[in-house]
Image 1: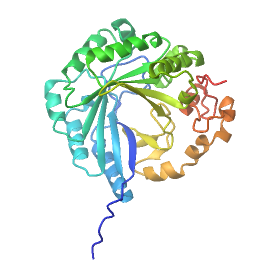
Image 2 (image 1 turned 90 degrees about the horizontal axis):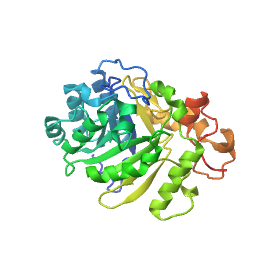
Image 3 (image 1 turned 135 degrees about the vertical axis):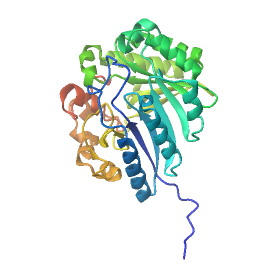
Amino acid sequence: MATERNCFFQPETFYFQWHLTNRCNLRCRHCYQNDYQGPDDSLNLRVAQKLIDQLKARGGQASLDLTGGEPFLLGQTLFDLLGFLNDSPEIEELKIISNGLLFSSSIQERLSCLNKLSTIKISLEGACPGTNDWIRGKNEFARAVEKIDLIDKNRFSVVLMFTLTKRNLDELELMLHLAYELGVDGLIIERFVPEGRGKKMTPDLLQAKDWKKVLNWITEKIGEEDISPLLPYRAFWIQLRPEFQILGAPCNLGESLCLMPDGTFFPCRRFAYPLGNIFQNDFGEILKKSPFLQRIKQKENLEGKCKSCPIKECSGCRALAFALFGNPLAEDVQCPWE
């Protein structure tokens, strides 16, 4: 006899940043990739089916940020994948992270049919061509702005992605003005982590005093004085519409995963430590039982001032520690706490 589903049951939602391809039409100086080849794009559908199977087994749902490389280089394969995911009850929401350069009216028309696709995130690394183009390539600022203007902002939430380095730190206020001018919904600011190709930009890494400058800027915007409550946050989402507010993004280590084109799991994309592969491992078991994740999440295992930090919910940026020192337990050198 069939049993009635508990109307109070809420399936658990899992979050993934899924890198669909290593291929990209740019070679940004701060890129966390070294390899811009393979694997075969057709592998994505196999990864997707495996992900759906694991979600079904757990009675869970997933919210996916789909990116690359550059996801629109996948062509029809991308739309086949998006259609499959959009039709899957286990998928709650879809978002795309792109450099935007391949966007077109025909692509927008095809994307508009996907009811679960809510957000398009476009990367810009400066509020003026000189700053952005030094990182992303000649004339790429103008091309990206032109494509952003094409996106239907009534259909999609459009968010700018801004990775902070010493080179663009002073354009934070200008980036906010640019976001308003472009009519987008928000601006995400993240800290640069020198990984892959980006290791050559290590001298441009923010220092603790630089990150403190950012935190002071944010407290001014929200009418506060003390930066201490902001210290656990690794990034910030500045929402412009429907109303202005700034939301902090704490480290989601052990709560979400990065999924690579070959099915490998990383703790996050800037933390290139393999935790397993979707074809051999269940993602839920990794999140729950990975000895590596359990170890680096425990403050008593950390080193330097991170070990003695009184902020219970903060464990510093483990990705930055791993990128700089090859030691995920090392002190977060960007933290301004003293």
